[in-house]
Each structure stands twice: as C-alpha cells, then as structure tokens.
Image (cartoon, rainbow, N blue to C red; front, side, top):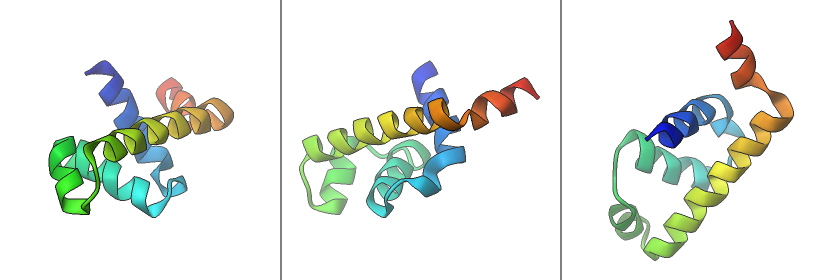
Length: 77
C-alpha cells in the first residue's frame, strides 16, 4: 500500500513523461482501480503484458525522480 501511494505521487508529477499506453494503463490501474484482468480484457492483451507495463512504468517514474527530484522537493516544502 505504501508503495502504491508513492507510485501515485510519482505518477502525478511524471505521468506526462510516460508513453500514451503507459499513461492509460497506469491510470486505469491506480486511479480507476481496475484489476489486471479487467484492464487486459479492455485492452485485448494478456494480464502479463499489463503487469509488465506497470512494472516498467514504476521503474521509469522512480528513475525520473532519482534524476529530477521533484517529489523530494515538494515533500520538503
């Protein structure tokens, strides 16, 4: 749960840097609270591909924060 909250904070800041597909899938999963299966069915892909996309998106957002540090700056304010 704590990781999900951190991810949503990073998503709020850096989601425009994700691909359109990553934005859609992460939005459906975290903001619309859809399951992997529901998203996979909607996108007509496998659950594994949705899981892979979420993992890749999380790593990218963490990388952006590591390099840019916007969330750290916001939290310090």
